[in-house]
Image 1: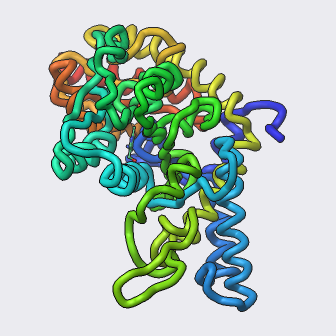
Image 2: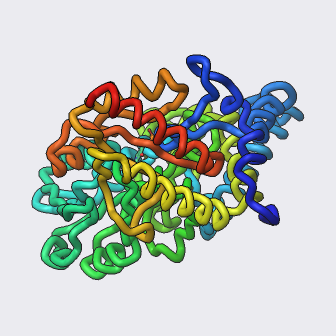
Length: 411
Ligand code: PMP
């Protein structure tokens, strides 16, 4: 059950790392798109596992192994319900979004993509949703095609039908851009992709974090996301896939736990999800991700989305009013998530970030692993402030003060 009222100040108190000073100033953490901070509930779940239940999963018949296995599988079920998976076995634990996309590229891709086939991406993608497809294309002789961006960093979909054909085997698209915050019309793209028989792989690293994701409603085939961006631990993430596709896929890695029977020359595979989880998994990570899902569900994804929209409206108004400052990305709040990418006059984004850091404000500067986006806007880098459930309008005010200081230094 979601909490009845949304109070970002109270929520913030649940995140120990936010309660510190940096360079003598209270920390203002505006880098959640890179990784979010972790609430006490998640830290406690990790502690409880290591202090009481630590054992390898699916292997022992002793009490600790039983407890660890139950907690690990229970977390799978909770994460599955959270995104409305049909069944828990559709949740494959991975290291994160990157590994999840690589898994699809290598396991589904190598079996189903051949010379002359096409893979459709967009210019908006994080490198995690480009490089695995480039590797697949090199190995198979497939061709990459791209959906272009308009001047606001939105996908140009007018000619989507001409980019798709019976040769298109995969459409790989982000739910939300980490570089600009653009929210993509995944359902519309999926319908068009399915009409030509292509599968749809969604990079949900910035999607599941901010909005309620319902994989069945989206209609996609694979959805990848990372625990560390949604209040969970690092080193754990999820590949959700349709059961029929997962069943038909070859394993991605070989090792313990993913087999049914091993012979000298040939072996047979365990059923999903274990077929894709070779070796000792990140047990604590999965349990921590389950705790993160509980935490977010208790607060309510809808309430988080409303709060972030308010914050973005305020940030765009206040930060956008700074002379010489350019905001990149869609102007409409309906089309953008809680990411504010900007440049300020001639100040290098790294200098902006350094000056803000001296004020205790953490923002990111660089190409955000989205060099094609930077090229589109003709810049090498941007500064990026990204917001989450624990940020407040006061944080935005502190950011504005810090940016005024940057302006004075570079004036
Ligand atoms: N895609 C997007 C849109 C991202 O923001 C990120 C993380 N910056 C990734 C993929 C990769 O996620 P991870 O590093 O957790 O695998």
